[in-house]
Amino acid sequence: MENTKVTRDEKGFIKINEKQQTDDPAIYAIGDVAGGVMLAHKASREARVAVEVIMGETSTFTNVVIPAVVFTDPELAWCGLTEGEAKQKGINVAVAKFPWAASGRALTFDRPDGLTKLIIDPESERILGVGIVGAGAGELIAEGVLAVEAGLTAKDLALSVHPHPTLSETLMEAAEVFYGHPTHTYVKKKAPTPA
Image (cartoon, rainbow, N blue to C red; front, side):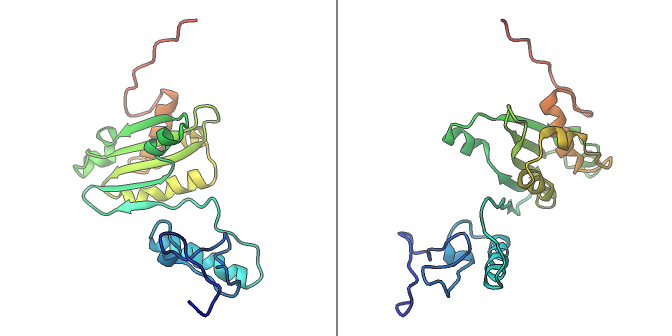
């Protein structure tokens, strides 16, 4: 490294731009050495960006939604904005939760201990984040990544027909919770706000 123009940040990670280039334009960096979340699927996307840039294509690693999964039992998976991050940043969000105890599929394999949660911008109704806890959450989060990455609204998700009975429909049901009319659980109606 001492024979290059590559520099490091205060934590020791190699500094890169949105094209994965280091301060030495002939050297690219991806993965753990470039910092950020240290996940293989993030490094794979960074590698794709670097190769595309090297090949002369226009590509950047900006506004990429990276899912995280904790392979415990039950699994935890999330992507996009979390409730904690929203609170920390002062972002107003609505949270819609669907308990797996109301999921016919979760009941068929005796795993009603899960929950699917959507973090939604209450004004635009755009899905900003998704959190899932339960058996197979790592598989289910892919739909959440697509929703956040594509800028889908809760309405988009609520109107997308999901096969029944499946765990994937817990995402649709959580979106329906946002509107107060989920198919498989009861949502207490909020009292009207006095004028």
